[in-house]
Image (cartoon, rainbow, N blue to C red; front, side):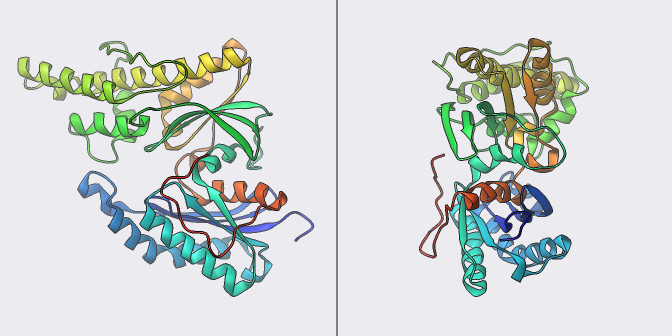
Length: 338
């Protein structure tokens, strides 16, 4: 191991992003990601096409990461990869590549939980202040919505989560309902910037404790659009910005109401967000405003919001220090508990 900390190559392939990163200590030396545009025409990620794209992208992406780090493979102390959760075929590509590379180099393997990595992205040393333990993290993506209590880098527990759909999936469904193409979440965010967030109101699901539900929100939004189109066929076209602003504000307020309740109940003042939806401008703004209520707020850099290998690398860093290694018999897991 290098005097400045372990040097680890990390690979992420859980969905439709092929990514490789190199980390030394807690500094990211390279973080290369290749996105897959092919899914846009299908309105969502097609697992088989994602797997094939990973096969095409993984060697160039890893080579680019190694080249940018200005290191060579022999300098690596370990190879890390996303074991799950995610699309099984996509995970299989990254897992197999990491295992093969580790075997050929005689380096140890480190398996990483994708959701844990999203949270630990906050601990990357990029010159910004990092949260102190314990802190609460709201993890929001296309597949997950969770409130997580983070006691240490490797000790995390879920306080609440969605009982059905995830917040990111809800944004994409909202977008599809009003004719916005996939991936819809970022485009809804863009439209919302020009609209009135208080013009239209929607009901809140009555779910106990810190859990969420988004299926009812999607259904009520669908009926709202259908009913208004019956009266005015141009309703969506003439009101798209206000529609986007209103439903986005509704979803974000719902997310933060539960999150803030957990923070108050546990008397925790350190709050963070993670996952792809943490790139949403309204979520970032409303969370930022909590500073006025005495909370310390941590929002990840955009490059660490969506799926990327940098977050896999920082998780692997802490697992390396803890001596937590994997082996060649490990297989990818579509479902993997935190």
